[in-house]
Amino acid sequence: MCAYRRDPDKFTVTAGRDGSRSFGDHDDRWSGPRYGGGNKYKNKKYGKGRGYGGYSRGRGTTGGRPNPRSRFEDDDGDINMDSGGSKPRFTPYSRGGRGSSSRGRYSRTRDRDNNTLQRLGLPISDEARWTKVTVPHGKKCEKDFLLKTINGQLTAPFEPVYFHHEGKNAVFYVKDPDVGSAIKRLSNRMTMPNGYKMVLHVMYSKPPIIPMDESAIKKLQERMSDRYDPTTRSLNLSSMFSDEVLRAAGMFLALNRSNVMSNVIKVIKENIPELTSLNLSNNRLLSLTHMSDMVSAAPGITSLDLGKNQLRSIEELDKISGWKLDHIQLDGNDLCDRFKDRNQYISAVRKRFPKVINLDGHVLPPPITFELETSTVLPRTKESYFLNEDIQNIVVKFLREYYSLYDADNRQPLLDAYHEQALFSVTASYNPANDYKQASLNDYISESRNLLKCKDPARREKLLRQGKLPVVSQLCLLPKTTHDPNSFIVDISHASNTHLIFALSGVFKESESKSDKPPIRAFNRVFYTVPAGSGMVITNDMLTVSNATTEQIQNAFKSAGPTPSSSPVTGVPPDLPSTSLGGSDHQTMIQKFSLQSGMNLDWSGKCLEENGWDYDKSAAVFTQLNSEGRIPAQAFVK
Image 1 (cartoon, one colour):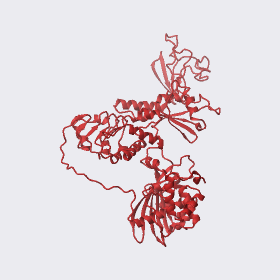
Image 2 (cartoon, rainbow, N blue to C red; image 1 turned 180 degrees about the horizontal axis):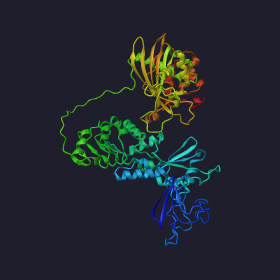
Image 3 (tube, one colour; image 1 turned 45 degrees about the vertical axis):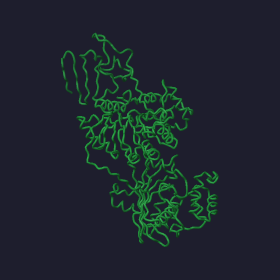
């Protein structure tokens, strides 16, 4: 041990090998009996029987003992500030351990980050203001009971956003973090109907991504209609997140969320493509990535207001540079402060929009350009591509028969669809375009032959199924599915007398999912086929599976019908020789028709019989009658 003495008559500090320090007996603030007797803290809050006259502490933590300056004796003239012993601070987010703060470690980090952003003059993200509240086993209680019980314990009512269930738990969001802290303090203070205490898990969260159902999209369309001026062809979508009509309906539609922006673009594309002026000010936009599709949806826009948003880089304008703007408002965004002078700012904007004559409300001198006015009309895009009508008929018929068997409970009949030396592989990956929590792809990833991730040549070889029996065996192991034929898009890449190559993309859902809402998957499939008898068989089948985008989810399974008459795969083919996908007896036709139409076997047989067992004619008749609502409900009772 080594001792350090400032004054031998006043104070000593002794350090031991274990890093502890002892304050000696010369300081009467720490003096006392060295062993046992007279210890003021004996059997008290700070420990039992620490028999040392000097106060000792190790490095790094007090270990629950009193701070050396927490107590003052009256003998030397100091005043005792401790009245009746110290009390712990109220810590609503503390777990009771050492070093807990009043709002928790995450809160301190959040506040520190927000202070840093404010000091640098940067905007505080909207994500920092949201709180997610989870009530374990809350699904057993009614929504009104949970919210009224929590509201009854608060001094002021709160407004829950996106109340829903995740498994057995009830979940909702609140915008104010102070309200989240108040709700956190109510955990274990209220009683559930089953007698158990109500537990509330509260954590800071990103803003909720609220799925938009048909009613929400309809309400959005109505509000856009109210905000549209047909005389000037202008649409005012400023401050949509605080729209009083939508909030009164319990809807929080922020344009900085991809699902909301995609539906706005869809409404514009389908109803007001002639739009010329658009106001998107004060919508907390951090990026224009989700707006890029609006350029093609409304190509005639010449006036755009993006003021009072949170755009930080002038490069964001590159994503909408396809518009020929002459008026643009950017004032109120951080990007405006990143230029040394006004001329540099004007030059950067005109680099993206050369025809701008009004910037932030200021008239600019006419630009000097050498561009000749030319109008280029691009041909209409085709979602599906067939070389000719004959090939279209063959492929559509093949796909109809193939997926009627693939979506059935037993996929063994698909053996007839594959060549003896057929190859099959599956690749699975999460969709990078989605900003919501994606459903698990574990059922596919275990067999995924993604060449970017599967580096082992031996494993690559193992995951490549060779021969029609191993291929179909692997197909039978994949989750049971229901495909949406109206989502099918076909592209023929090669057709000759020896083989036919085509790609198919679309969406499907897993029919045996344990979830109340089965996840919607997106897929792409490439078929290599060769002639066989009167039909064709598959020699190479490559399947890619991912999670569907928000737009695909909203458009999936909109209409039921045995034929994709409204699909990009259009046209009902005439009678063709049967392919290699099986028989044509009446019972098989009835089962296929029932599977694809959703009707029971009796009504499916009736429809086929009345149309002379012509499958395609029956399908067309069903689609028409179903769209007119003329098929009774009992036809769909199985």
